[in-house]
Amino acid sequence: MTTPEKPATTAAVDFRCGTVSITGRPNTGKSSLLNRFIGQKLSIVSRKAQTTRHLVRGILTAPDCQYVFVDSPGFQTRHDNVLNKSLNRRATEAARDADVVLWVIESPKVYEADRALLARIPAGRKVIAVANKVDLVKERERLLPFLERVAKERAFHAIVPVSAKSGKNAQELLRVIRNALPRAEAMYPEDQITDRDERFFASELVREKLFRELGDELPYSCEVAIDSFKEEGALRRIEATIWVDRESHKPIVIGDKGERLKRVGTAARKDMEQLFDGKVYLGLWVKVKRGWTDDARALRTFGYS
Ligand SMILES: Nc1nc2c(ncn2[C@@H]2O[C@H](COP(=O)(O)OP(=O)(O)OP(=O)(O)O)[C@@H](O)[C@H]2O)c(=O)[nH]1
Ligand SMILES: [Mg+2]
Image (cartoon, rainbow, N blue to C red; front, side, top):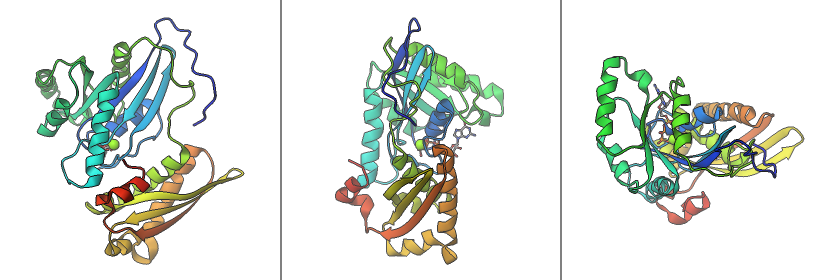
């Protein structure tokens, strides 16, 4: 995650560069796809819908193309609070501003929620339909009719079946995206893989572990804030607070004798050490901010607009 001054060399003839918005309803595998392209866990992933809350840029520089991927929150209809309205706004804005939009759906079905999001992508945008999770389609003969149904939804630039999980067809998808991007100079230095800093990833990795550790509802009312982030030689010393929105949630997050909080901390620390390539000390606290998901001011302090 370095940021040298020089942009990538763009000596290749026909060099392409542009933004690629990864959109879709929750849980279709958008963040998994970003991580697959970049080869690192930049965007957090869980089995639960609505894991992603922030726009995360992942930059991939190849000899003939620089792809600037933007992962976005799943477009959601689940809860109508201020947080979710803000997430939906982010999801659609990212699609509006991109050179190419990936509309990620789950094979082998198109849901109404997929269509609702597709309808929000302005006409004239180059949209690639990405039929993810093809590894789950056991009967191969179901795939072709499914792709034919997809083709009827819009005049897509292309339709590509992939598996973010196994990597199947990911290279082919990259080739299709490249050919849809404009001829342009690189925007970022070639060894830069994201626009987010280590503080951001530290808080996201804690949030990912909460999503994985907690039941169905609680993760949605948890947020993580980094209180301090200090580099002491090779060690990163990080103090973070997990905010919950009710007093009764606190003991659930902490767990019996602090066991759950400890598991969250250990798993997050290990991922941070891998991503930052160095030792990490992580101190975690749990505090209550009542009703923060519906409180615009509290949301701003957590970086939502
Ligand atoms: N079998 C299979 N599972 C996948 C694939 N891609 C993603 N998943 C799983 O689908 C779930 C959701 O993946 P995410 O990458 O978090 O999905 P997302 O679209 O970013 O979800 P939100 O951020 O909540 O909108 C996780 O359990 C992933 O492991 C795939 O190609 N095949
Ligand atoms: Mg996601």
